[in-house]
Image (cartoon, rainbow, N blue to C red):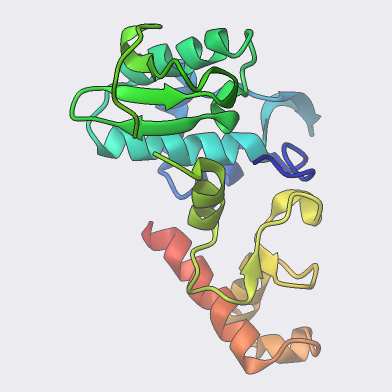
Length: 209
């Protein structure tokens, strides 16, 4: 289920790649393959740059899942295009789908077409098998895994930058303050030890991802 926050966060390509936990080179390759489309172009200093939405972060996580299962970019594009077509040409149609995978097939079931599962990676063919639920909730959890209790990504807070939960303090600033030799609690007195520890652990998680 898509929440009211859907699509309101805005990210530059490098920030989108970092928060979605993929290498920037992968992001560039997927954008070149037309798997990811910018929300719009924005003027940043003297040049224009593509800007991506919170939706795109979740789409990146889905693409990563499918790539990890050895699907090729071309197969994933066919799947996404087919789901969009079967959703009435809605490019966000996949957000409403139950998407599952078989050994060599991406399968989608749309709520408005439950009697017609789509073998999306092979085009709109009717098949008998169904597979992959609660997709949006799972992808949202992947952005901030459960072990980080004090970190959140809320598209309405600082454009969706990872922050200490319930604050407007970005986790990367907490890390930078610590790396600069200062106690983050001095810079941000409203934070406690657990929040600081979680913010730094999350930033380390992003680097390692």
